[in-house]
Image (cartoon, rainbow, N blue to C red; front, side):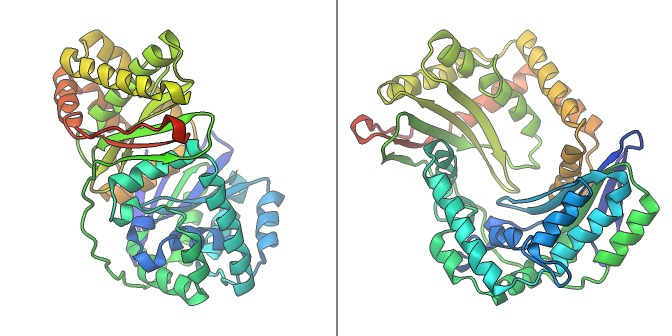
Length: 414
């Protein structure tokens, strides 16, 4: 069972003991991401994440990597549009060591200027890598165009120009204003000594007394875009999207089932008809991105350029059929079994558990027990699905595509 403890300054500690394991996953989540950046600081959350690995007052960058390697541990980090995470997985006997080192990286990084310049080059290469991969780039592009003019639509990596402009003091100031106790969650799952870890959390995080400087940014407005970017490519890569549900929207479970039925599984409507029955695409799928105040439901496909318009028309036909005919009870029950099974299987991973606990805190301010989520999925009815399908696909489509100039096509939002 998940437990939570709030230390005196507001840092939240959530944990789940799993004594039958020999491993423990430990993570630190900070409730700030790329959507919380001003236009001048675009990409700074991601840059900070990289710099946490580039040396502290006690250890140089290489030493940090070697210390985790010496205990056979895994350490990593990532940045999203709404939060940043540092996390590690080690044997239970190294739990205190790993948490101590993660806290050191978070609070004692030096942001050495030579290291900063080196890491800017690394991230510039990362930006180029994504730009050279249209199958990846199109997913960023659909968010950018659908939330055009809002920080939520800005690429997490920022731009080369932004990166070049960042100075050491920018990182320090951003941390002072955004990395505040009320936005920090320490999440642990696996085998560990609860009392010793709690004392360590209090010791390593209890000193923090920053006050969050609120950045008032209005919620994003959805834009139905239609854009084709001509570039050399063997395939045309397309994303089409409509507004989805916010993370805390009660319809999120209905949408999870709708997504599964439409394009998130090998038995889905899109996969079966477009790939299996007609052989028109290798990759075709749907997914939903949930944020704190909105969401985006996206369909992706990649295919031969001369078949792109056919696939697009077929997707719209499948969706129209779904809106007209709905889903029968038997199909819905099968989807529930698959979604719930996937949900429980993810709990076999301590890494998944700490992520789920942290996001519950970030979005709900409390823990949502797994059984509660499963009950919500079970409660979804055919009528719930029909209503959401009608509402979701009544919105105009946002459309972006990357492919050869000679096969360009556009889609008029309706």
